[in-house]
Length: 302
Image (cartoon, rainbow, N blue to C red):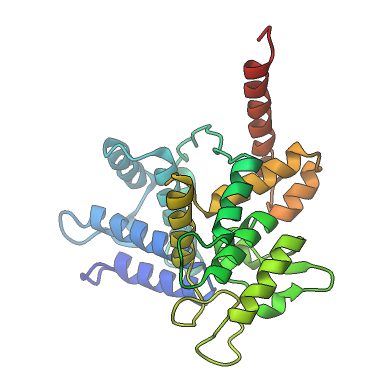
């Protein structure tokens, strides 16, 4: 945090420590620390920032105006405002302020964009090429198991790297997944993922005997979400020539392909671990867009 030990910087430090104690994901911690550090820096331009009780909605709107002027994307501003709101909620619970002023500021609208989704053919071609070990990577069995579980279970990258050996029921082919807010759900996995896991477990070499982590890095320790993202991006770039492929691409593909083949939207919601059905419904829009594109290409009267 900022070297000046202002009340704002100090309490943000305490807040981040609380997030660590609550096992917030490394991705969330990294983003919140960056966003809140920038928040402190903005209000420290002319000396020490205001005391917590001196903050009001007008100050937050001024800060948001600065973000707008910096031509920041709405998605980034929404994330930064979420971090600030969460911090002020923490300060309220600690009795440091009388109300959460973050709630008085309107959230910038989210852009209405649909995720770009790989076709079933593109997805399977990439995974098949990963299995061929064309890149001669040091841990090919681990890498193909990562891809098979990302697509076979529709996992978030944080969920994937958090998997333990004991989370799998190999008889029934269910895996216990810990999602956002540590909410647990059970997700089935198929024969290809099962075969990839069996091959990987034969080659898996933990640095410490008894380490429960499923996926390990080159040092034999649990792989980080950043490390797993790098693996997916490497294969996507070199095998498909698409630098835009990332772990969430396979989650999008999982949901869209299930829906296209007739899966119930409520079932997909459960499989993905979405708290709200509206979050899952974006995949119906993706499917309709694909359907219209197919119609335009194929129908003689289109």
